Length: 266
Ligand SMILES: NC(=O)c1ccc[n+]([C@@H]2O[C@H](COP(=O)([O-])OP(=O)(O)OC[C@H]3O[C@@H](n4cnc5c(N)ncnc54)[C@H](O)[C@@H]3O)[C@@H](O)[C@H]2O)c1
Image 1: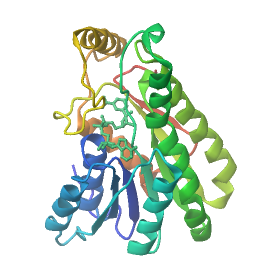
Image 2: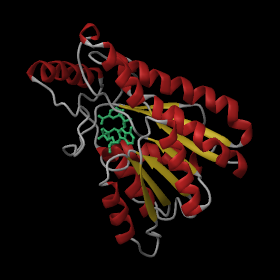
Image 3: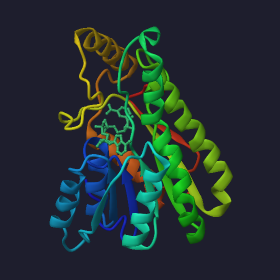
């Protein structure tokens, strides 16, 4: 479903926009009138930019730029916000979508460096981007930040990722409290397991061996059985609540973390 013009005149930055939930958010927001800044470290993020521009029409400005950078560094977050301001002069909405469990295994099986890698992937890009976007939103006197948490804040086989997403919940609530009077809303959704096409960039570049696939299957079973609906969600079922929270329709919602997990509260 498309709400024509819902984001007319708005500039939206989406991180992790090359594939999956991030690409879907960007495509639908563009169809609803937003100008998009697509941030990813995968260079094929330019294909999403091209698709948005090609889809331009009466209600869709077909305006997008892409930025290829690593958001696990503060420099990457700064570069992304600077590119957004250079292209469109303002940032109305920031969707912090980069994240995802790299490995699934019992906590005792994680190597120390692997624990660090999960925090770098699923907490630091959001922490950095929220900081880097503040000057622009404060100068505008308004802005909206939507963070991607997870129902995995309570789940098995990915304790470091759970901790990172618990961190997302904490920063969402505290940032919302600190900047509400400056006109900045900060919200999050907590998706459950989501069906998506095969990933062009895998979560774990090293691949998963048979044991790791077995541990992942245990996590999938736990997630599915914890959901009242006993199924995964669709990409569209994740994108719709994210865009509702990003829109002015959610103008009195801040500091909230909305579970979108078929009844699993995480
Ligand atoms: N898919 C699910 O089942 C699910 C469930 C719960 C929560 N989530 C959350 O939703 C979000 C999106 O999930 P997804 O499955 O669509 O992700 P994905 O792994 O399919 O895509 C992530 C994107 O982020 C990019 N990226 C990763 N690290 C980056 C970095 N350091 N700098 C710049 N770009 C980087 C990747 O290149 C990729 O395009 C994540 O935060 C994830 O934790 C997903």
